[in-house]
Length: 328
Length: 250
Image (tube, rainbow over all chains, first blue to last red; front, side):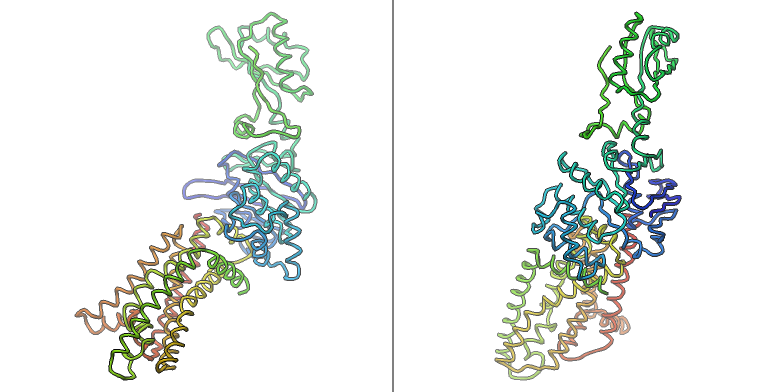
Protein backbone atom coordinates (compact mmCIF):
# COMPACT_ATOMS: atom_id res chain seq x y z
CA UNK A 1 0.00 0.00 0.00
CA UNK A 2 2.86 2.33 0.83
CA UNK A 3 6.23 1.90 -0.84
CA UNK A 4 9.15 4.01 0.28
CA UNK A 5 12.29 3.58 -1.79
CA UNK A 6 15.70 4.95 -0.84
CA UNK A 7 14.18 8.09 0.62
CA UNK A 8 16.53 10.89 1.65
CA UNK A 9 15.98 14.46 2.74
CA UNK A 10 18.50 17.22 3.17
CA UNK A 11 17.79 20.48 4.96
CA UNK A 12 20.55 22.51 3.40
CA UNK A 13 23.69 20.59 4.37
CA UNK A 14 22.03 18.59 7.10
CA UNK A 15 20.90 15.08 6.25
CA UNK A 16 17.58 14.60 8.07
CA UNK A 17 16.52 11.31 6.48
CA UNK A 18 18.99 8.91 4.97
CA UNK A 19 18.15 6.19 2.48
CA UNK A 20 14.96 4.95 4.13
CA UNK A 21 13.55 1.89 2.48
CA UNK A 22 10.41 0.08 3.56
CA UNK A 23 7.01 -1.14 2.49
CA UNK A 24 3.69 -1.19 4.26
CA UNK A 25 1.07 -3.77 3.35
CA UNK A 26 -2.62 -2.91 3.24
CA UNK A 27 -4.20 -3.20 6.67
CA UNK A 28 -0.96 -2.94 8.62
CA UNK A 29 -0.52 -0.51 11.49
CA UNK A 30 3.06 0.66 11.47
CA UNK A 31 4.63 2.27 14.50
CA UNK A 32 7.35 4.68 13.58
CA UNK A 33 9.55 4.94 16.61
CA UNK A 34 12.49 7.15 17.33
CA UNK A 35 13.74 9.88 19.62
CA UNK A 36 12.84 13.50 18.94
CA UNK A 37 14.72 14.78 15.93
CA UNK A 38 15.24 11.31 14.44
CA UNK A 39 13.54 12.30 11.19
CA UNK A 40 10.09 10.85 11.89
CA UNK A 41 8.09 13.96 11.11
CA UNK A 42 10.19 14.72 8.05
CA UNK A 43 9.54 11.22 6.71
CA UNK A 44 5.82 11.42 7.38
CA UNK A 45 5.62 14.87 5.79
CA UNK A 46 7.26 13.45 2.68
CA UNK A 47 4.88 10.49 2.57
CA UNK A 48 1.93 12.87 3.03
CA UNK A 49 3.17 14.92 0.08
CA UNK A 50 3.97 18.11 1.98
CA UNK A 51 7.76 18.03 1.63
CA UNK A 52 9.43 16.95 -1.58
CA UNK A 53 12.15 14.33 -0.96
CA UNK A 54 15.77 15.11 -1.89
CA UNK A 55 16.07 11.60 -3.30
CA UNK A 56 13.97 8.47 -3.51
CA UNK A 57 10.41 7.60 -4.38
CA UNK A 58 7.17 7.24 -2.51
CA UNK A 59 4.20 5.36 -3.90
CA UNK A 60 0.78 5.26 -2.31
CA UNK A 61 -1.37 2.45 -3.64
CA UNK A 62 1.02 2.29 -6.60
CA UNK A 63 0.73 6.02 -7.33
CA UNK A 64 3.88 8.11 -7.21
CA UNK A 65 3.27 11.09 -4.92
CA UNK A 66 5.55 13.38 -6.92
CA UNK A 67 4.16 12.48 -10.32
CA UNK A 68 0.48 12.44 -9.39
CA UNK A 69 0.26 14.36 -6.11
CA UNK A 70 -3.48 15.01 -6.16
CA UNK A 71 -4.34 11.37 -6.91
CA UNK A 72 -1.98 10.09 -4.20
CA UNK A 73 -3.12 12.64 -1.59
CA UNK A 74 -6.74 11.65 -2.18
CA UNK A 75 -5.82 8.29 -0.63
CA UNK A 76 -4.23 9.78 2.49
CA UNK A 77 -5.61 11.15 5.72
CA UNK A 78 -2.81 13.05 7.40
CA UNK A 79 -2.63 14.47 10.88
CA UNK A 80 0.42 16.71 11.40
CA UNK A 81 2.25 16.73 14.69
CA UNK A 82 1.08 20.15 15.86
CA UNK A 83 -2.53 19.54 14.67
CA UNK A 84 -2.93 22.94 13.05
CA UNK A 85 -6.57 24.05 12.90
CA UNK A 86 -8.45 27.26 12.17
CA UNK A 87 -9.29 28.66 15.61
CA UNK A 88 -12.20 30.80 14.46
CA UNK A 89 -14.20 27.94 12.92
CA UNK A 90 -16.58 25.54 14.56
CA UNK A 91 -15.60 21.87 14.52
CA UNK A 92 -18.38 20.80 12.18
CA UNK A 93 -17.74 23.76 9.84
CA UNK A 94 -14.08 22.83 9.71
CA UNK A 95 -14.79 19.19 8.89
CA UNK A 96 -17.23 20.24 6.19
CA UNK A 97 -14.52 22.43 4.65
CA UNK A 98 -12.00 19.58 4.80
CA UNK A 99 -14.46 17.08 3.34
CA UNK A 100 -15.28 19.41 0.44
CA UNK A 101 -11.59 20.09 -0.13
CA UNK A 102 -10.83 16.37 -0.18
CA UNK A 103 -13.53 15.83 -2.78
CA UNK A 104 -16.08 13.92 -0.71
CA UNK A 105 -19.28 13.80 -2.82
CA UNK A 106 -21.82 16.36 -1.66
CA UNK A 107 -24.43 13.74 -0.80
CA UNK A 108 -22.03 11.94 1.52
CA UNK A 109 -20.50 14.91 3.32
CA UNK A 110 -22.98 15.08 6.20
CA UNK A 111 -22.78 11.37 6.97
CA UNK A 112 -18.97 11.31 6.66
CA UNK A 113 -18.67 14.22 9.11
CA UNK A 114 -20.87 12.45 11.66
CA UNK A 115 -19.01 9.19 11.25
CA UNK A 116 -15.57 10.70 11.58
CA UNK A 117 -16.66 12.75 14.60
CA UNK A 118 -17.97 9.59 16.17
CA UNK A 119 -14.88 7.51 15.39
CA UNK A 120 -12.52 10.16 16.73
CA UNK A 121 -14.66 10.63 19.83
CA UNK A 122 -15.27 14.29 19.04
CA UNK A 123 -19.03 14.15 18.55
CA UNK A 124 -19.80 16.14 21.70
CA UNK A 125 -17.67 19.10 20.60
CA UNK A 126 -19.05 19.27 17.04
CA UNK A 127 -20.58 22.71 17.55
CA UNK A 128 -17.79 24.23 19.61
CA UNK A 129 -15.37 26.86 18.31
CA UNK A 130 -11.99 25.24 17.71
CA UNK A 131 -10.05 28.05 19.39
CA UNK A 132 -11.73 27.21 22.71
CA UNK A 133 -10.89 23.51 22.69
CA UNK A 134 -8.30 21.81 24.88
CA UNK A 135 -5.19 20.20 23.43
CA UNK A 136 -6.66 16.71 23.69
CA UNK A 137 -9.87 17.69 21.98
CA UNK A 138 -7.99 19.46 19.19
CA UNK A 139 -6.08 16.22 18.70
CA UNK A 140 -9.36 14.39 18.24
CA UNK A 141 -10.60 16.98 15.76
CA UNK A 142 -7.35 16.45 13.83
CA UNK A 143 -8.02 12.72 13.84
CA UNK A 144 -11.57 13.30 12.62
CA UNK A 145 -10.14 15.42 9.81
CA UNK A 146 -7.79 12.60 8.82
CA UNK A 147 -10.74 10.20 8.77
CA UNK A 148 -13.35 12.43 7.14
CA UNK A 149 -12.74 11.45 3.52
CA UNK A 150 -12.52 7.75 4.46
CA UNK A 151 -9.02 7.37 2.95
CA UNK A 152 -7.35 3.94 2.79
CA UNK A 153 -4.12 5.31 4.29
CA UNK A 154 -3.76 7.23 7.55
CA UNK A 155 -0.60 9.05 8.55
CA UNK A 156 -0.66 10.18 12.16
CA UNK A 157 2.28 12.14 13.50
CA UNK A 158 2.48 11.75 17.28
CA UNK A 159 -1.27 11.20 17.67
CA UNK A 160 -1.09 10.99 21.47
CA UNK A 161 1.43 13.72 22.21
CA UNK A 162 0.23 15.98 24.97
CA UNK A 163 -2.77 13.88 25.95
CA UNK A 164 -3.64 12.65 29.41
CA UNK A 165 -3.65 8.89 30.08
CA UNK A 166 -7.40 8.51 29.53
CA UNK A 167 -7.24 10.32 26.21
CA UNK A 168 -4.20 8.25 25.21
CA UNK A 169 -6.13 5.06 25.88
CA UNK A 170 -9.04 6.42 23.87
CA UNK A 171 -6.86 7.30 20.85
CA UNK A 172 -5.17 3.89 21.01
CA UNK A 173 -8.57 2.25 21.01
CA UNK A 174 -9.53 4.21 17.88
CA UNK A 175 -6.27 3.27 16.14
CA UNK A 176 -6.62 -0.40 17.06
CA UNK A 177 -10.17 -0.37 15.72
CA UNK A 178 -8.74 0.58 12.33
CA UNK A 179 -6.74 -2.63 12.15
CA UNK A 180 -7.45 -4.47 8.90
CA UNK A 181 -9.57 -1.61 7.56
CA UNK A 182 -6.95 1.09 7.03
CA UNK A 183 -3.25 1.20 6.47
CA UNK A 184 -1.83 3.30 9.26
CA UNK A 185 1.56 4.83 9.93
CA UNK A 186 1.84 6.48 13.30
CA UNK A 187 4.90 8.00 14.84
CA UNK A 188 5.88 8.35 18.45
CA UNK A 189 8.92 8.55 20.67
CA UNK A 190 7.42 6.28 23.30
CA UNK A 191 7.90 2.53 23.03
CA UNK A 192 4.74 1.39 24.89
CA UNK A 193 2.78 3.68 22.60
CA UNK A 194 3.54 1.68 19.46
CA UNK A 195 3.54 -1.62 21.30
CA UNK A 196 -0.07 -1.05 22.26
CA UNK A 197 -1.38 -0.37 18.78
CA UNK A 198 1.03 -1.44 16.02
CA UNK A 199 1.45 -4.62 14.09
CA UNK A 200 4.99 -3.71 13.07
CA UNK A 201 7.53 -1.29 14.43
CA UNK A 202 10.16 0.64 12.52
CA UNK A 203 12.85 2.24 14.61
CA UNK A 204 14.50 5.27 13.13
CA UNK A 205 17.50 7.01 14.59
CA UNK A 206 19.35 9.95 13.07
CA UNK A 207 17.40 9.53 9.85
CA UNK A 208 18.27 5.87 9.41
CA UNK A 209 16.22 2.73 9.86
CA UNK A 210 17.83 1.02 12.85
CA UNK A 211 15.63 -2.06 13.06
CA UNK A 212 12.15 -3.27 12.30
CA UNK A 213 9.89 -6.10 13.32
CA UNK A 214 6.73 -7.03 15.19
CA UNK A 215 6.31 -5.42 18.61
CA UNK A 216 7.10 -8.53 20.65
CA UNK A 217 10.40 -8.99 18.86
CA UNK A 218 11.33 -5.35 19.29
CA UNK A 219 10.35 -5.57 22.94
CA UNK A 220 12.47 -8.64 23.57
CA UNK A 221 15.39 -6.93 21.85
CA UNK A 222 14.88 -3.72 23.68
CA UNK A 223 14.23 -5.27 27.02
CA UNK A 224 16.48 -8.33 26.80
CA UNK A 225 17.85 -8.13 30.27
CA UNK A 226 21.46 -7.28 30.73
CA UNK A 227 23.30 -6.06 33.78
CA UNK A 228 26.39 -4.15 34.61
CA UNK A 229 28.24 -5.47 37.59
CA UNK A 230 31.16 -4.01 39.46
CA UNK A 231 33.04 -6.47 41.64
CA UNK A 232 36.39 -7.31 43.22
CA UNK A 233 35.98 -10.94 42.08
CA UNK A 234 37.68 -12.49 39.07
CA UNK A 235 35.93 -13.48 35.86
CA UNK A 236 35.92 -17.20 36.65
CA UNK A 237 34.61 -16.57 40.16
CA UNK A 238 31.70 -14.59 38.80
CA UNK A 239 30.97 -17.22 36.16
CA UNK A 240 30.82 -20.07 38.61
CA UNK A 241 28.71 -18.01 41.00
CA UNK A 242 26.13 -17.33 38.31
CA UNK A 243 25.95 -20.93 37.14
CA UNK A 244 22.43 -22.25 37.41
CA UNK A 245 20.80 -18.90 36.75
CA UNK A 246 17.90 -19.28 34.27
CA UNK A 247 18.45 -18.06 30.73
CA UNK A 248 22.10 -19.02 30.33
CA UNK A 249 23.91 -15.88 31.36
CA UNK A 250 26.94 -14.81 29.37
CA UNK A 251 29.48 -12.82 31.24
CA UNK A 252 31.86 -10.47 29.52
CA UNK A 253 34.63 -8.79 31.36
CA UNK A 254 34.80 -5.33 29.95
CA UNK A 255 38.39 -5.23 31.06
CA UNK A 256 37.91 -1.92 32.77
CA UNK A 257 39.69 -2.17 36.00
CA UNK A 258 38.69 0.54 38.38
CA UNK A 259 41.26 0.25 41.09
CA UNK A 260 40.62 -3.13 42.68
CA UNK A 261 37.27 -3.47 40.94
CA UNK A 262 36.40 -4.98 37.59
CA UNK A 263 33.40 -4.18 35.42
CA UNK A 264 31.40 -7.13 34.07
CA UNK A 265 28.55 -7.28 31.64
CA UNK A 266 26.01 -10.04 32.13
CA UNK A 267 23.68 -10.83 29.25
CA UNK A 268 20.76 -13.20 29.27
CA UNK A 269 19.08 -15.04 26.49
CA UNK A 270 15.26 -14.95 26.43
CA UNK A 271 14.11 -15.17 29.99
CA UNK A 272 10.78 -15.72 31.66
CA UNK A 273 11.88 -13.55 34.53
CA UNK A 274 11.46 -9.84 34.72
CA UNK A 275 14.61 -7.73 34.84
CA UNK A 276 13.88 -6.97 38.48
CA UNK A 277 13.69 -10.65 39.35
CA UNK A 278 16.89 -11.41 37.48
CA UNK A 279 18.61 -8.60 39.30
CA UNK A 280 17.60 -10.08 42.63
CA UNK A 281 18.76 -13.54 41.52
CA UNK A 282 22.18 -12.24 40.50
CA UNK A 283 22.48 -10.47 43.82
CA UNK A 284 21.58 -13.64 45.73
CA UNK A 285 23.99 -15.82 43.75
CA UNK A 286 26.88 -13.44 44.17
CA UNK A 287 26.14 -13.08 47.87
CA UNK A 288 25.87 -16.84 48.32
CA UNK A 289 29.29 -17.34 46.72
CA UNK A 290 30.67 -14.81 49.15
CA UNK A 291 31.96 -12.49 46.44
CA UNK A 292 32.09 -8.73 46.64
CA UNK A 293 29.50 -6.64 44.84
CA UNK A 294 29.97 -2.89 44.55
CA UNK A 295 27.38 -2.08 41.95
CA UNK A 296 24.65 -3.84 40.00
CA UNK A 297 22.38 -2.19 37.49
CA UNK A 298 20.21 -3.01 34.50
CA UNK A 299 21.26 -2.19 30.98
CA UNK A 300 18.99 -2.58 27.94
CA UNK A 301 20.67 -3.69 24.76
CA UNK A 302 19.31 -0.97 22.46
CA UNK A 303 20.15 1.44 25.19
CA UNK A 304 21.51 4.16 22.98
CA UNK A 305 18.29 4.29 21.00
CA UNK A 306 15.93 3.66 23.82
CA UNK A 307 17.34 5.81 26.54
CA UNK A 308 15.48 8.61 24.85
CA UNK A 309 12.39 6.50 24.30
CA UNK A 310 11.44 4.71 27.45
CA UNK A 311 11.91 7.40 30.03
CA UNK A 312 9.46 9.53 31.95
CA UNK A 313 6.35 8.69 29.96
CA UNK A 314 3.25 7.06 31.40
CA UNK A 315 3.55 3.32 30.93
CA UNK A 316 0.41 1.26 31.06
CA UNK A 317 -1.45 -1.70 29.67
CA UNK A 318 1.09 -4.30 30.65
CA UNK A 319 4.10 -2.17 29.86
CA UNK A 320 6.95 -2.80 32.22
CA UNK A 321 9.05 -0.07 33.56
CA UNK A 322 12.71 -1.14 33.61
CA UNK A 323 13.60 0.62 36.82
CA UNK A 324 17.01 -0.35 38.08
CA UNK A 325 16.87 -2.29 41.36
CA UNK A 326 18.66 -0.43 44.04
CA UNK A 327 20.87 -3.12 45.50
CA UNK A 328 24.48 -2.71 46.23
CA UNK B 1 -11.64 25.77 -9.89
CA UNK B 2 -13.97 24.05 -7.46
CA UNK B 3 -11.17 23.59 -4.93
CA UNK B 4 -10.28 27.29 -5.31
CA UNK B 5 -13.87 28.24 -4.55
CA UNK B 6 -13.93 25.99 -1.45
CA UNK B 7 -10.75 27.67 -0.20
CA UNK B 8 -12.16 31.12 -1.01
CA UNK B 9 -15.37 30.37 0.87
CA UNK B 10 -13.48 29.42 4.00
CA UNK B 11 -11.24 32.46 3.77
CA UNK B 12 -14.22 34.79 3.39
CA UNK B 13 -15.96 33.13 6.33
CA UNK B 14 -12.83 33.49 8.49
CA UNK B 15 -12.36 37.12 7.49
CA UNK B 16 -15.90 38.08 8.35
CA UNK B 17 -15.69 36.14 11.62
CA UNK B 18 -12.71 38.21 12.67
CA UNK B 19 -13.05 41.53 14.50
CA UNK B 20 -10.44 42.87 12.06
CA UNK B 21 -12.98 42.85 9.21
CA UNK B 22 -15.38 45.08 11.12
CA UNK B 23 -12.71 47.44 12.36
CA UNK B 24 -11.42 47.84 8.81
CA UNK B 25 -14.85 48.21 7.21
CA UNK B 26 -16.08 50.66 9.83
CA UNK B 27 -12.99 52.84 9.68
CA UNK B 28 -13.02 52.74 5.89
CA UNK B 29 -16.70 53.65 5.63
CA UNK B 30 -16.24 56.52 8.09
CA UNK B 31 -13.34 57.81 6.03
CA UNK B 32 -15.27 57.51 2.77
CA UNK B 33 -18.32 59.16 4.28
CA UNK B 34 -16.26 62.07 5.59
CA UNK B 35 -14.49 62.66 2.26
CA UNK B 36 -17.76 62.36 0.35
CA UNK B 37 -19.32 64.95 2.64
CA UNK B 38 -16.32 67.27 2.13
CA UNK B 39 -16.59 66.92 -1.65
CA UNK B 40 -20.33 67.62 -1.54
CA UNK B 41 -19.71 70.85 0.40
CA UNK B 42 -16.99 71.77 -2.07
CA UNK B 43 -19.19 71.12 -5.11
CA UNK B 44 -22.12 72.99 -3.51
CA UNK B 45 -19.91 76.06 -3.22
CA UNK B 46 -18.57 75.87 -6.78
CA UNK B 47 -20.07 77.44 -9.90
CA UNK B 48 -22.57 75.16 -11.63
CA UNK B 49 -21.01 72.87 -14.26
CA UNK B 50 -20.77 69.26 -15.41
CA UNK B 51 -17.00 68.63 -15.16
CA UNK B 52 -15.31 66.35 -12.65
CA UNK B 53 -14.90 69.31 -10.31
CA UNK B 54 -18.70 69.36 -10.06
CA UNK B 55 -19.04 65.63 -9.51
CA UNK B 56 -18.48 64.55 -5.86
CA UNK B 57 -18.37 60.90 -6.95
CA UNK B 58 -15.58 61.51 -9.44
CA UNK B 59 -13.68 63.31 -6.72
CA UNK B 60 -14.29 60.44 -4.34
CA UNK B 61 -13.09 57.87 -6.89
CA UNK B 62 -9.69 59.24 -7.66
CA UNK B 63 -9.53 62.95 -8.37
CA UNK B 64 -7.70 63.66 -5.13
CA UNK B 65 -5.03 61.94 -2.99
CA UNK B 66 -7.73 61.29 -0.39
CA UNK B 67 -8.50 58.27 -2.57
CA UNK B 68 -5.00 56.75 -2.59
CA UNK B 69 -3.55 57.44 0.83
CA UNK B 70 -6.06 55.49 2.95
CA UNK B 71 -5.75 52.57 0.55
CA UNK B 72 -2.06 52.30 1.45
CA UNK B 73 -3.23 51.45 4.96
CA UNK B 74 -6.42 49.52 4.31
CA UNK B 75 -5.21 47.22 1.54
CA UNK B 76 -2.41 45.67 3.63
CA UNK B 77 -4.93 45.10 6.42
CA UNK B 78 -7.26 43.09 4.22
CA UNK B 79 -4.59 41.07 2.41
CA UNK B 80 -2.12 40.39 5.22
CA UNK B 81 -3.77 37.26 6.59
CA UNK B 82 -4.39 35.46 3.27
CA UNK B 83 -1.39 33.11 3.30
CA UNK B 84 0.76 34.45 6.15
CA UNK B 85 -1.88 33.42 8.68
CA UNK B 86 -1.87 29.87 7.27
CA UNK B 87 1.92 29.79 7.56
CA UNK B 88 1.86 31.23 11.08
CA UNK B 89 -0.71 28.81 12.48
CA UNK B 90 0.65 25.83 10.51
CA UNK B 91 -2.56 25.17 8.58
CA UNK B 92 -0.62 25.51 5.33
CA UNK B 93 0.48 21.92 5.98
CA UNK B 94 -3.05 20.53 6.19
CA UNK B 95 -4.10 22.71 3.26
CA UNK B 96 -1.30 21.48 0.99
CA UNK B 97 -1.65 17.83 1.98
CA UNK B 98 -5.26 17.90 0.84
CA UNK B 99 -5.61 16.95 -2.83
CA UNK B 100 -5.21 20.54 -4.06
CA UNK B 101 -2.46 22.27 -6.04
CA UNK B 102 -0.61 25.46 -5.12
CA UNK B 103 -2.33 27.16 -8.05
CA UNK B 104 -5.73 26.28 -6.62
CA UNK B 105 -4.72 27.56 -3.20
CA UNK B 106 -3.47 30.86 -4.64
CA UNK B 107 -6.53 31.29 -6.85
CA UNK B 108 -8.82 30.59 -3.90
CA UNK B 109 -7.06 33.17 -1.76
CA UNK B 110 -7.12 35.68 -4.60
CA UNK B 111 -10.82 35.18 -5.13
CA UNK B 112 -11.40 35.81 -1.42
CA UNK B 113 -9.23 38.94 -1.56
CA UNK B 114 -11.27 40.29 -4.46
CA UNK B 115 -14.41 39.79 -2.40
CA UNK B 116 -12.81 41.75 0.48
CA UNK B 117 -11.87 44.49 -1.99
CA UNK B 118 -15.41 44.70 -3.36
CA UNK B 119 -16.77 44.79 0.19
CA UNK B 120 -14.82 48.04 0.65
CA UNK B 121 -16.69 49.59 -2.26
CA UNK B 122 -20.22 48.32 -1.68
CA UNK B 123 -20.94 51.12 0.84
CA UNK B 124 -20.12 53.71 -1.84
CA UNK B 125 -23.36 52.71 -3.60
CA UNK B 126 -24.99 54.72 -0.85
CA UNK B 127 -23.24 57.86 -2.15
CA UNK B 128 -24.26 56.98 -5.70
CA UNK B 129 -27.85 56.91 -4.56
CA UNK B 130 -27.42 60.19 -2.65
CA UNK B 131 -25.83 61.86 -5.65
CA UNK B 132 -28.56 60.69 -8.01
CA UNK B 133 -31.19 61.84 -5.51
CA UNK B 134 -29.84 65.35 -4.96
CA UNK B 135 -27.71 66.02 -8.04
CA UNK B 136 -26.77 64.84 -11.49
CA UNK B 137 -25.35 61.36 -11.90
CA UNK B 138 -23.01 60.76 -14.84
CA UNK B 139 -23.60 57.04 -15.43
CA UNK B 140 -20.72 56.60 -17.88
CA UNK B 141 -18.24 58.26 -15.55
CA UNK B 142 -19.52 56.16 -12.67
CA UNK B 143 -19.15 52.87 -14.57
CA UNK B 144 -15.65 53.88 -15.67
CA UNK B 145 -14.79 54.65 -12.04
CA UNK B 146 -15.93 51.23 -10.83
CA UNK B 147 -14.09 49.56 -13.70
CA UNK B 148 -10.95 51.43 -12.68
CA UNK B 149 -11.43 50.41 -9.06
CA UNK B 150 -11.80 46.80 -10.15
CA UNK B 151 -8.56 47.08 -12.17
CA UNK B 152 -6.59 48.67 -9.34
CA UNK B 153 -8.05 46.16 -6.90
CA UNK B 154 -7.03 43.27 -9.14
CA UNK B 155 -3.36 44.08 -8.83
CA UNK B 156 -3.46 45.50 -5.29
CA UNK B 157 -4.95 42.21 -4.10
CA UNK B 158 -2.48 40.23 -6.16
CA UNK B 159 0.51 42.11 -4.72
CA UNK B 160 -0.92 41.83 -1.22
CA UNK B 161 -1.29 38.08 -1.75
CA UNK B 162 2.30 37.80 -2.95
CA UNK B 163 3.55 39.62 0.16
CA UNK B 164 1.35 37.44 2.34
CA UNK B 165 2.96 34.39 0.72
CA UNK B 166 6.45 35.78 1.35
CA UNK B 167 5.87 36.68 4.99
CA UNK B 168 5.59 34.17 7.80
CA UNK B 169 3.33 36.36 9.90
CA UNK B 170 0.45 38.66 8.94
CA UNK B 171 2.11 41.74 10.44
CA UNK B 172 5.20 41.40 8.26
CA UNK B 173 2.93 40.79 5.26
CA UNK B 174 1.14 44.05 6.02
CA UNK B 175 4.40 45.96 6.20
CA UNK B 176 5.69 44.45 2.95
CA UNK B 177 2.42 45.22 1.18
CA UNK B 178 2.49 48.79 2.48
CA UNK B 179 6.04 49.21 1.16
CA UNK B 180 5.14 47.77 -2.24
CA UNK B 181 2.02 49.92 -2.67
CA UNK B 182 3.70 53.02 -1.28
CA UNK B 183 6.58 52.60 -3.76
CA UNK B 184 4.16 52.32 -6.68
CA UNK B 185 2.27 55.33 -5.33
CA UNK B 186 5.47 57.34 -4.89
CA UNK B 187 6.32 56.74 -8.55
CA UNK B 188 3.31 58.91 -9.30
CA UNK B 189 5.06 61.87 -7.68
CA UNK B 190 7.82 61.64 -10.29
CA UNK B 191 5.42 63.03 -12.91
CA UNK B 192 5.58 66.38 -11.10
CA UNK B 193 9.37 66.41 -11.37
CA UNK B 194 11.38 67.74 -14.30
CA UNK B 195 12.05 64.40 -16.04
CA UNK B 196 12.30 63.41 -19.69
CA UNK B 197 9.19 62.86 -21.76
CA UNK B 198 9.93 59.13 -22.04
CA UNK B 199 10.29 58.75 -18.29
CA UNK B 200 7.11 60.72 -17.83
CA UNK B 201 5.28 58.31 -20.14
CA UNK B 202 6.41 55.30 -18.11
CA UNK B 203 5.62 56.91 -14.79
CA UNK B 204 2.13 57.89 -15.91
CA UNK B 205 1.58 54.33 -17.02
CA UNK B 206 2.51 52.69 -13.72
CA UNK B 207 1.07 55.44 -11.52
CA UNK B 208 -2.16 54.70 -9.75
CA UNK B 209 -2.78 58.50 -9.68
CA UNK B 210 -3.01 58.86 -13.40
CA UNK B 211 -4.88 55.57 -13.63
CA UNK B 212 -7.73 56.59 -11.37
CA UNK B 213 -7.77 60.21 -12.48
CA UNK B 214 -8.51 58.98 -15.99
CA UNK B 215 -11.10 56.41 -15.01
CA UNK B 216 -12.92 58.61 -12.49
CA UNK B 217 -13.29 61.32 -15.12
CA UNK B 218 -14.77 58.75 -17.48
CA UNK B 219 -11.72 57.99 -19.63
CA UNK B 220 -11.33 54.23 -20.02
CA UNK B 221 -7.75 53.76 -21.16
CA UNK B 222 -7.23 50.09 -22.07
CA UNK B 223 -3.45 50.41 -21.51
CA UNK B 224 -4.17 50.68 -17.80
CA UNK B 225 -6.31 47.58 -17.90
CA UNK B 226 -3.47 45.70 -19.57
CA UNK B 227 -1.14 47.02 -16.87
CA UNK B 228 -3.55 45.91 -14.11
CA UNK B 229 -3.86 42.49 -15.63
CA UNK B 230 -0.11 41.98 -16.11
CA UNK B 231 0.70 43.06 -12.57
CA UNK B 232 -2.04 40.78 -11.22
CA UNK B 233 -0.70 37.81 -13.14
CA UNK B 234 2.82 38.63 -11.93
CA UNK B 235 1.68 38.68 -8.31
CA UNK B 236 -0.25 35.42 -8.60
CA UNK B 237 2.58 33.68 -10.41
CA UNK B 238 4.99 34.89 -7.72
CA UNK B 239 2.71 33.67 -4.95
CA UNK B 240 2.52 30.18 -6.50
CA UNK B 241 6.33 30.08 -6.77
CA UNK B 242 6.76 31.18 -3.16
CA UNK B 243 4.28 28.56 -1.99
CA UNK B 244 6.17 25.84 -3.86
CA UNK B 245 9.47 27.04 -2.39
CA UNK B 246 7.95 27.16 1.08
CA UNK B 247 7.35 23.40 0.88
CA UNK B 248 11.00 22.75 0.11
CA UNK B 249 12.18 24.98 2.95
CA UNK B 250 9.45 24.93 5.58
